[in-house]
Image (cartoon, rainbow, N blue to C red; front, side, top):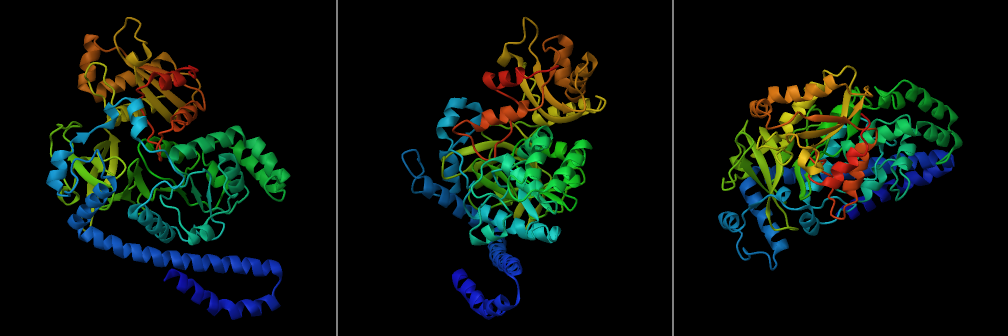
Length: 531
């Protein structure tokens, strides 16, 4: 049907093409034709999005049926020697025969065996298609003209849109060297276009690395623009880049692209800190939008509200199959019953449980969501924190949310400091106790502070004691030593991310760890300590 629609449009426009060829120059004809192709592609995309919107309305109104179909699809795709529930898609039978699993408890080598390798097309399935199509339409509605020709640039090899688009995508896409995998080349193309309205990156941590690299290689990039390495020489634009860099990090994006309105990245575990750093420094004054929340098993949440300052996501009732495990003070019993989407209660927190067709396991993701509303009969959630990012040297269980808040409070007391990234290690991983009590080793990358005084380092431990009575009690008895804070040099966490991505089993998007469990990763940061 889509093909016939395109053929009809071309036949109707053929007389216009003939007339225009006789009246306007070649350059004007090419520009007119490009704009026409863009308008046609956008209409096709809107038509497809409207169809997917109707599908979403249907599935979110009939949630029980939609989840049953998702479970059946996952089981049928995964049937094999490991599937003990073959022949039955009853949810109670499924839950009884497949116990909950927690991949964070497995050794790294075992995880590497079972995880699928990353692919350029991050996800497949209806949820990823809907996230892309509905996200593009919602973004264009919230920020008119951002998707106009030449208005968008992606500066990373990976895209924030979960599903690649066919023909409309190639017409609507930004200028990009064909097949390029080089971040620097993509950034150079974006820098040559001062009229950008939207800046895209695979994830927020990747964009953080892009801006950090821009400050380091700014002069080199300016010379390439002036020399015309990727097109005609643009000495004036090169001068604008140099002047923008001279004024520092804060607000750099808007100085480079005065019409920029929104930053688009894909949300996943561990991205909030990078978003905060970008918003406070390079992307100050800009809105952020993530079309979806993704995990290694697929797209689990759709963002239909770009105007919301903090991402709200509709939990999709299709594949992968989602269950909700109630949270009680950040702990749950292994035998606690899971809920389906229709059973979610507003205001409550749940851990996501995912079943996909790649690994037939009911996998506890560790990602905790809070239900904040409903879309038809499906819950709308906000992602809160991750249970698996927990520090414990004496059974105290310092979770990601508590630690992040304590660290933010401590950094707020360090004059001029802005936190870019951090990672934590239990002292036993690095054998750093040296006969003293076990403790936390904390690595931070900062902007605005080159050295940490002993007084500044002590503030984190004080904030942790204020946040956790249990930790304070252990510190008072001497069972736990004071947290040791180390300042790492620029690029340390970029190197950590490169090491994580180089693993053959690395998934996309990368779930940025805050607690490192493996010595070689902790030592990578340890070697880059500057204070």
